[in-house]
Image (tube, rainbow, N blue to C red; front, side):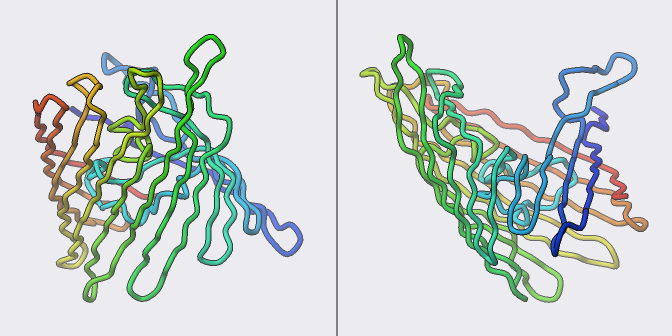
Length: 301
């Protein structure tokens, strides 16, 4: 399969206002488009990735979740790798940053195993994060607190409390190598973990909403060699403790491992090749695997 859907572009502005600048950022790509096909023209519509305005310590709009450390994303030849055990969310939010501290109110949503996806929350998700930076690289510790809420009909609703912790970062090793990692866990963090590989709540036979525990992580090593080449290898996994009453086809775990070689053949031009192996297991114990080979060419203009 050939595709250019991951092509990405953005517009940024910076306007002086008082002793600070008002900044904006609008970013789009073409992945997951509901328009377009491969029959003749491959004409895909743009997709909103990020759109925010910032002034001083404040940011408002759609951006990477404050619960996520983007520097922990492994380098790859594909669009995204090792997502199983990764915190990965972009969503609308209001964020305040003061030195190493970040606090945000972010868009809530509740995904369940047996009551659908519901937008019935009455309070936002709350994230607090502390960042360490230095010659060693960077490390972030983030905490998430959230309301899980669904409507059950007849004006009735059910609620549960969700929470999560995430430790992530990029650790420099030697002169050029680095280790990227993310360890996370909690209850009711479904859509934040593994690109929503699992769900965050279940409605029990007794009619109570229960938060679903899950934990996971990733680790990846990046090793430059030669003049402009580097080798990347890593592992990722997510493990979900679903209640006994969910259907047997519900995802219980997802894991993957990969290796990739990337080479800058010219300024800002990168060729990449990658091999990934993944496995998914459901609550019945049945599993399935995938092996994917990727070749990519990227120009970062």
